[in-house]
Length: 444
Image (cartoon, rainbow, N blue to C red):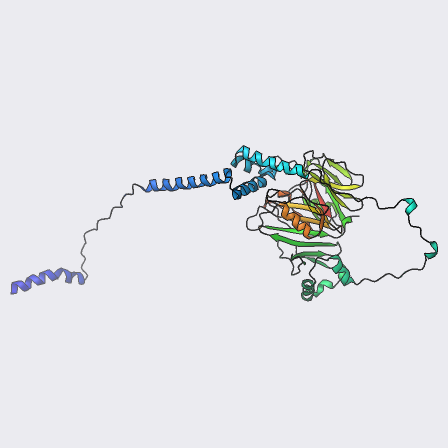
């Protein structure tokens, strides 16, 4: 029995010693060896190959498919690339030459369709001498007539007929200082790139950015699916002119410099310019222009190009670029396409100028108002751009009678009263150097 108990004590002793804190070395655990995965590299290669094959399949469908959606998408891509000389490589590099050529032929046919569609000038209305009305001198009087006093408030709303009166009255309640200098001197400006605009809206639902009564000028925000821009409405057509840069023929200037040098209030791009590989300095004008009576450049001879003309009586007309210039034209520039001629749309349809790009457009309403439109573009999250048909509808919304597309892309910017109110598509600069610009305001 004693021997049995002693064996138990010897068996328990190591565990008691361990509880008492004695050190015992344990046998090192053997590290588990990672199992080699002989197929891991093959799996990665298979995934990469699948991605490549998927991309190739998508490309083939995009580039060669006759599915209507793919055709429309492909045409939009080609048009977007071709609309700007510096971006043409995007079409030539990624798509077969014959596909790009086919689309160019379609665009050329569209230009041919536009040829010959010109504004009609009004016929002289003065009756022949033998039919002129004779006035009885006895009915004439030298007594002065009292001028009719016009209510400044109603005169304001008549001039800026686009405004939603309710929203403007609410704005005045919040900003009574607006009327400190009277209705005829109202000046509101929230059009800067860092400004958020006003709480005033037009009857079309557009946010008002600026109301400049002394210069008879209204700026509104235009926006839609994928695009953002500014429409300036000048109420006095006599204040519009085309201004040349100081170095035209050698170098161009930014829109801000052209506007400030001419003493204007607002300005935007006009003609295009020679721009090899996107490196032009704006000095060599593309097409023909008249700036305050001075002629520059040479007429486009390609079908489809138009010339927008401003005459001595402040009327705007659009004609083919190869037509003779009338004697009464004071300012003009050439580009393409015309958007509206004599109140009728000249663009439209999915295949007609459908590329989404930065845009610049100029027009005149039925009542003579000047319409200056700039759409920003190529800025993901802000504005991609839009097509010319959308621009035409924006202009028509404001009763445009004649309107034309101008040099867009990186050239499409608008400058107003000391600052740019649209963002250049190249966000590293505020404006390219241009040969000329359309300028409004302070013109004598």
